[in-house]
Image 1 (cartoon, helix red, strand yellow):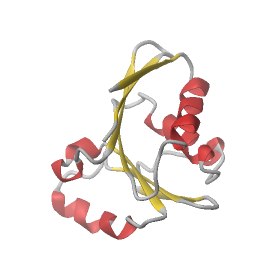
Image 2 (cartoon, helix red, strand yellow; image 1 turned 120 degrees about the vertical axis):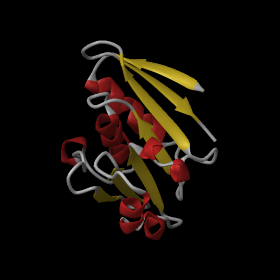
Image 3 (cartoon, rainbow, N blue to C red; image 1 turned 90 degrees about the vertical axis):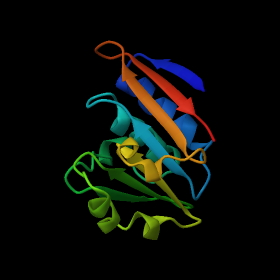
Length: 141
Protein backbone atom coordinates (compact mmCIF):
# COMPACT_ATOMS: atom_id res chain seq x y z
CA UNK A 1 0.00 0.00 0.00
CA UNK A 2 1.23 3.46 -0.88
CA UNK A 3 -0.11 6.53 0.92
CA UNK A 4 -0.25 10.13 -0.31
CA UNK A 5 -1.43 13.32 1.37
CA UNK A 6 -2.97 16.13 -0.68
CA UNK A 7 -3.88 19.59 0.60
CA UNK A 8 -6.21 20.84 -2.14
CA UNK A 9 -8.45 19.66 -4.94
CA UNK A 10 -5.73 20.74 -7.38
CA UNK A 11 -3.19 18.47 -5.66
CA UNK A 12 -5.64 15.55 -5.78
CA UNK A 13 -6.21 16.18 -9.50
CA UNK A 14 -2.44 16.35 -10.06
CA UNK A 15 -1.98 13.03 -8.25
CA UNK A 16 -4.59 11.56 -10.60
CA UNK A 17 -2.59 12.81 -13.59
CA UNK A 18 0.52 11.10 -12.24
CA UNK A 19 -1.36 7.88 -11.50
CA UNK A 20 -2.64 7.74 -15.08
CA UNK A 21 0.91 6.95 -16.19
CA UNK A 22 0.80 3.82 -14.00
CA UNK A 23 -2.56 2.49 -15.25
CA UNK A 24 -2.66 -0.16 -17.92
CA UNK A 25 -5.39 -0.64 -20.52
CA UNK A 26 -7.90 -3.27 -19.42
CA UNK A 27 -7.63 -2.21 -15.77
CA UNK A 28 -10.40 -1.86 -13.24
CA UNK A 29 -9.84 0.82 -10.61
CA UNK A 30 -12.06 0.93 -7.53
CA UNK A 31 -12.38 4.35 -5.90
CA UNK A 32 -13.46 4.23 -2.25
CA UNK A 33 -14.38 7.04 0.08
CA UNK A 34 -17.26 8.85 1.70
CA UNK A 35 -19.32 11.45 -0.14
CA UNK A 36 -17.10 14.44 -0.81
CA UNK A 37 -13.86 12.52 -0.26
CA UNK A 38 -12.53 13.42 -3.72
CA UNK A 39 -13.22 10.37 -5.89
CA UNK A 40 -14.42 12.40 -8.87
CA UNK A 41 -11.60 14.89 -8.33
CA UNK A 42 -9.15 12.00 -8.67
CA UNK A 43 -10.90 10.90 -11.89
CA UNK A 44 -10.50 14.44 -13.26
CA UNK A 45 -6.73 14.04 -13.06
CA UNK A 46 -6.74 10.52 -14.49
CA UNK A 47 -8.85 11.70 -17.45
CA UNK A 48 -6.46 14.58 -18.09
CA UNK A 49 -3.50 12.22 -17.79
CA UNK A 50 -4.92 10.14 -20.65
CA UNK A 51 -5.93 13.25 -22.64
CA UNK A 52 -9.48 11.90 -22.50
CA UNK A 53 -11.09 15.03 -21.00
CA UNK A 54 -10.24 18.32 -19.35
CA UNK A 55 -10.72 18.33 -15.59
CA UNK A 56 -13.58 20.84 -15.86
CA UNK A 57 -15.45 18.47 -18.21
CA UNK A 58 -15.37 15.52 -15.79
CA UNK A 59 -18.43 15.34 -13.56
CA UNK A 60 -19.85 12.78 -11.19
CA UNK A 61 -21.95 10.14 -12.93
CA UNK A 62 -24.20 9.78 -9.87
CA UNK A 63 -27.42 10.11 -11.88
CA UNK A 64 -26.27 8.89 -15.30
CA UNK A 65 -24.26 6.03 -13.74
CA UNK A 66 -21.64 5.89 -16.53
CA UNK A 67 -19.62 8.61 -18.25
CA UNK A 68 -17.34 7.83 -21.17
CA UNK A 69 -14.17 9.80 -21.90
CA UNK A 70 -12.20 9.05 -25.06
CA UNK A 71 -8.50 9.74 -25.31
CA UNK A 72 -6.21 9.15 -28.26
CA UNK A 73 -5.21 5.69 -27.01
CA UNK A 74 -7.67 4.80 -24.26
CA UNK A 75 -11.35 4.95 -23.35
CA UNK A 76 -12.16 5.69 -19.72
CA UNK A 77 -15.48 4.66 -18.24
CA UNK A 78 -16.27 6.56 -15.03
CA UNK A 79 -18.91 4.57 -13.19
CA UNK A 80 -20.80 5.49 -10.02
CA UNK A 81 -22.56 2.68 -8.16
CA UNK A 82 -23.85 4.81 -5.27
CA UNK A 83 -27.47 4.39 -6.39
CA UNK A 84 -27.09 0.74 -7.37
CA UNK A 85 -28.21 -1.59 -4.58
CA UNK A 86 -28.60 -5.09 -5.96
CA UNK A 87 -26.60 -7.49 -8.08
CA UNK A 88 -29.44 -7.45 -10.61
CA UNK A 89 -29.20 -3.65 -10.97
CA UNK A 90 -25.44 -4.00 -11.38
CA UNK A 91 -25.89 -6.63 -14.07
CA UNK A 92 -28.15 -4.30 -16.10
CA UNK A 93 -25.25 -1.85 -16.44
CA UNK A 94 -23.35 -4.37 -18.57
CA UNK A 95 -19.95 -3.56 -17.09
CA UNK A 96 -18.48 -6.73 -18.58
CA UNK A 97 -19.31 -5.32 -22.02
CA UNK A 98 -17.19 -2.25 -21.27
CA UNK A 99 -14.06 -4.27 -20.57
CA UNK A 100 -11.82 -4.16 -23.60
CA UNK A 101 -8.05 -4.02 -24.21
CA UNK A 102 -8.19 -0.24 -24.81
CA UNK A 103 -10.47 0.61 -21.85
CA UNK A 104 -10.10 1.40 -18.17
CA UNK A 105 -13.01 1.25 -15.75
CA UNK A 106 -12.94 3.78 -12.90
CA UNK A 107 -15.62 2.62 -10.46
CA UNK A 108 -16.86 4.66 -7.50
CA UNK A 109 -18.58 2.70 -4.72
CA UNK A 110 -17.43 -0.63 -6.18
CA UNK A 111 -16.84 -1.97 -2.68
CA UNK A 112 -20.62 -2.48 -2.44
CA UNK A 113 -20.27 -5.53 -4.69
CA UNK A 114 -17.88 -8.35 -3.75
CA UNK A 115 -17.78 -9.44 -7.39
CA UNK A 116 -15.85 -6.26 -8.25
CA UNK A 117 -13.31 -6.68 -5.47
CA UNK A 118 -10.32 -8.56 -6.75
CA UNK A 119 -6.63 -8.63 -5.97
CA UNK A 120 -6.13 -7.85 -9.66
CA UNK A 121 -7.82 -4.42 -9.35
CA UNK A 122 -6.17 -1.25 -8.17
CA UNK A 123 -7.97 0.32 -5.24
CA UNK A 124 -7.74 4.03 -4.47
CA UNK A 125 -9.16 4.88 -1.05
CA UNK A 126 -9.68 8.57 -0.30
CA UNK A 127 -10.19 9.83 3.23
CA UNK A 128 -11.13 13.36 4.17
CA UNK A 129 -8.69 14.53 6.85
CA UNK A 130 -9.66 18.22 6.88
CA UNK A 131 -11.64 20.64 4.71
CA UNK A 132 -9.18 20.44 1.81
CA UNK A 133 -6.77 17.75 3.02
CA UNK A 134 -7.04 14.14 1.84
CA UNK A 135 -5.23 10.92 2.68
CA UNK A 136 -5.09 8.73 -0.40
CA UNK A 137 -4.14 5.08 -0.14
CA UNK A 138 -3.33 2.95 -3.18
CA UNK A 139 -3.50 -0.80 -3.02
CA UNK A 140 -1.95 -2.21 -6.15
CA UNK A 141 -2.38 -5.68 -7.61
